[in-house]
Image (cartoon, rainbow, N blue to C red; front, side):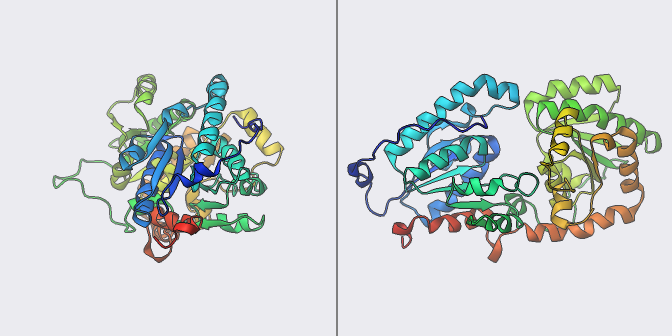
Length: 409
């Protein structure tokens, strides 16, 4: 799916197609391809409705975007595939879907097309639409700050405006002459910026500290990380036998895998939750989690953490050998703080004994946990959009000037 879609002859859009729509009633296409994009898209749609109450919204989305008012031509389930083998198996269907969307968008000729994340699918489609004369934007920049920064130039050939979730991203795009805008991170809107833990009950808390385990959202991540995480728990309970452990499932599909690994570990008393990672992180004393968005969630929830990750050895060797990876820090809290705020245990350092030692320090040394908590409110502040706006509101404002004929509505 990373290969560009073959170029097709671009149909000529008849004048009548554009003039069908009443003046002052813009049509905006939103294209989301996964559950996180559906959430982002629904918030963006509602913010755009405030600015353009007569607008019509079409495209691809999930239940949240449909509930917000999207005329969904396709559902996100049609694009939600994970893993190289699954992508290859579905590649012909995905290419047909992109071709169908391309032709329908040309026929509809919306005033603006916004691709929401899903860069492998959306950026190629946006590029062809931009060449065909449509206005395009992309919401959520790929991680150009981590690897292959030069992708910024090609991304700029797909979208007239890149909406960035992280404050360091627009400067990178500017080096390549691409217009990018920091709109804030939606997670910063979900969490309050205080260091106070959420009180979920008035009854006395159970004895023993609470450890949140978040081994990832993908099957391959959980298979690779959960056994190591559970071995770390075994070691940690030797010194902290009263330790409580909870695992929030990223999806119901992971339950069988997690239960199988728990049975193998012979650990008892571990609670499994369906989702609920946010309330768990608000109440946990410490978290052990896979590198990714979960680390940002933990920081915003004021939960001290240890971050760990492993990828296939061959993949790691290729990434390092080819110099593709440009960052020497991996977790979002460390990247945003520009210092080694939280322990990062990657590849050979991701071992049970190392993780157990890191967690024990956070649990037994108040100064270690306090050092992280001292910086977390700053991370929250820098992830907020300017002028107190929510991320969706800032995104809608950044898109508004791509709709100049409707700017005064």
